[in-house]
Length: 207
Image (cartoon, rainbow, N blue to C red; front, side, top):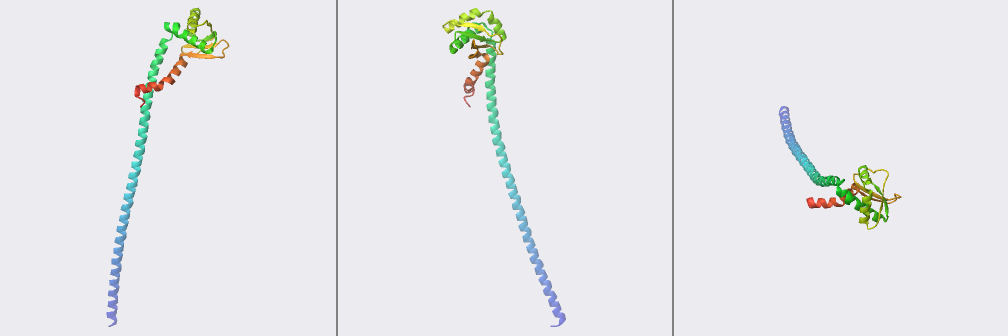
């Protein structure tokens, strides 16, 4: 084999080797690219699943919150209706003040009950300014009515200064150490606290 033939064979072998390397490199590059594409797709799907999961969790959370808020709104609306019932009752209560029955029965009975509760025969009446003026002119009749309901003679005195109440009467002993509050304000407050659950139950069945 001459030098020229050797040279030619070496070049051919080198070219063949280069082609093999290029072919292997291309195959490896294709494999790497496919792996990269597969990995990108996996990451994309994972991210989509993660986003979808987060969105579902967010929606569930918002739905749960909406249900809670909805229930609160319903309960608050029901209690607002209960409030309206008591507001109407308060209006009728206020209309009752100043009536004939108010002065001839309600006030005497409340004073008699207060005197009996305190165990005294003489009391001091604390009234608002309108009732104080009205009762001042009928104190004798009121004393008789109170004594009748109490079953014993009760002496009545009017407090010097009117009190800031909507109606009714606050009864105290003459030393003003013990009080019986039969004002509209106190009576209505106690009635509301006691009756509100029953009114709610009556209107909505406790639901």
